[in-house]
Amino acid sequence: MVRIFRGGVLDERFEGGVVVIGPRPTQMIGLVRGDLFVRDGSVCEMTGMVTGNLLAERTGKVVLKGLVNKDAKAVGGDLEVYGMVVGNVVNEGGRVYVDKQALVKGKVIGGVTDAPLPPPAKTPAPAPSAPPPSPSG
Image (tube, rainbow, N blue to C red; front, side, top):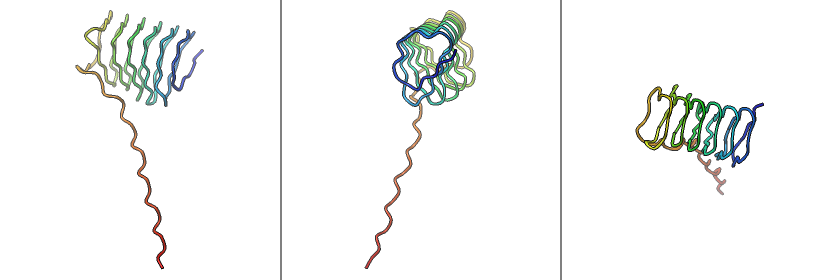
């Protein structure tokens, strides 16, 4: 079973995969017995545990402060690792930062930046339209 979340605080135990799709930031402090996918401009701070894989897809961003039992991957998204990854940390077309205090038992595969990643870019708000000219005289 897959659960979909659109933001907020998730302090529960989930059986199966979890998909986070914005628009609000998500703070995951529970347990996911499966894979965690973060997509579409979503930001997820993971301080809990994922027994499967963790994927930052497309324009998603994951800040990992907890534990991932398998691989943590950036597949087009952003991944910051401050916690522990038992498997590999893999960059497949995204951006990855691994803190010097983080523990990665597997390998770090692909390019890694040497500084934390900036927050995701906000889409610019449309400019307010000018009021129509008032008729004169």
